[in-house]
Image (cartoon, rainbow, N blue to C red; front, side, top):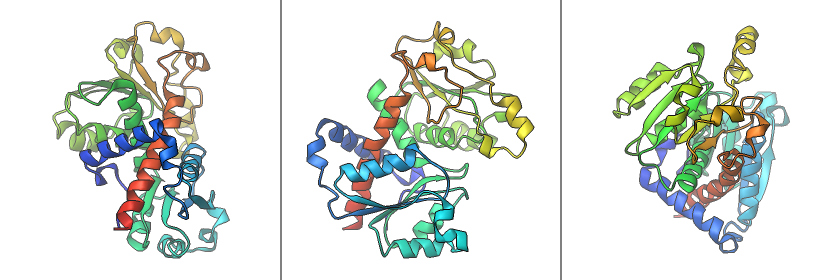
Length: 306
């Protein structure tokens, strides 16, 4: 049974196919409004979420399907000690496809190994968030026309940011990528990603603590929040949380066609004054997330029926 746990589960060709389907959904929504009629998506969210959960739910509803599930672990039998494996086996009796978010890394993989229906990883701890990566790829494709020859700056929490890790991995499969890593020393990109992804694929990169110094080079600026929930020490969080705040004046030397992205939620790392800048793409990103999840649900359900 085909599932999506890691972005590398899909080939470049399959990712491009998903993007093409999402673009067709945007252009021809009526064509897809009953594609999932009588199908059910189960959203199993053991960790808080607004965008991802509602994006999956709206995606399934717009495909003509229905949604069941829960939005917190204490609303499920996990509160009684039920294992992820047993939950997956149980939900397989009720639904046609599962979207799961879990604080423990590897939990969606365990679910996929035990379910008899497709499982989509909607985020597992600090590990993977492949549908956010697909959302990011669709955003870049629509705003930049493709993935070749781009300089992408990642700013903020690069240590714990699963969206950053996944997107760097996904973009590494395209040619002409340049990566700029902007973070405090304490939140630098993990060395294993630099070694196994950037260096292994011969992707040029540089690290800096100064956002404004590299701003003129960037085609894409991917902002992230410093995530309180990933810190063991509250003092470290408070010291680092305001390291980078994007304000209009910091964009004075940026390219006119810069694409500013953020996986959201933001706290204060992008000033609301930036929202009206035509280069701000983070709310478009939210909308694109619904369309790419529609394409993904279609693909996995179609493969499950073969």
